[in-house]
Amino acid sequence: MTRADLAFGLILAGLSAYLLFGGADFGAGLWHLLSRDRPGDRRVIERAVGPMWEAHHAWLALALLLAWTAFPPIFNDMVDAYRVPLVIAAAGIAARGATSALDRFGPRRTAVGRFLSRRFRIEPLLGPASLLTPFCLGAVATTIATGEASWMSVTGIYGGALTTMLCAYFAAVHLIWNARKAGDRDVLLHFQGYAIVSGVAVGLFAMPGALALGVRSPLILVSAAAGLLSIVLVVRRRYLAVRVSGAVAVVSVLWGAASMAHLDLDGALAHGSVLDAEFTALAVGATAFAVAMAWLHVLFQRQSATKA
Image (cartoon, rainbow, N blue to C red; front, side, top):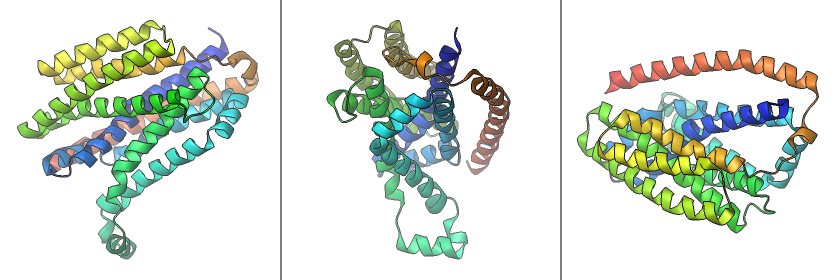
């Protein structure tokens, strides 16, 4: 394995984590939008993600930082060519953060919070932001992988739509377990239905597209098999196992699509001294980051259990 392969693999690992954790958050925002008349569903969604929402964007920051330092020419070309969708995605991330900070986590405890709460209703931003952000990021990723000229091409739009659907699917799979912990049978049945319907929809949408785009990676078949297994596990009420199979189904799509990318990684690779410093810093920083995220998750789960 060359240094270019290692750096590219680390970027894909960061994107995989973001697709799973951040993607589940985006998908939860979509289900939150569609559950206006179901307060029980919304309560489970808010307890499941809560303050963890914005922390997961660190995975995207990690992937972008690795791309910037390891492959500067490719990163510069990407930012220059896709500045519009990237700005839209950044605005969506900011809107979601504002929703969490100002509308749900104690905004009325301060004078500024009370002022904003009286004059602005920012909760409606959550759904549209959760739709636009994964769409734009997926469109950019698909365009890069296929070599298309525009992110608004048919291929780019297809990739954006598929990414959004994957986020909704994995969020539904993830929320089944949270509904079970909450002890709400009606909400549990809702998310079971969401997971089955969205899983079937993703499969029907993804496979023809993979054939049309000429994706020949065996990982696409792995994704299809994991998706079918997930539906079976949902029906058989294996709620913990389905989170694993669902994750495999989602991540396999990303790695399979990455195999299509015709990028000159060796030609764009940074100097060896830069890579040595990057890999060393990543090893130290990743350890600290993993511990911090695990501790944040434990604290939030305790808080959710107390409220429940």
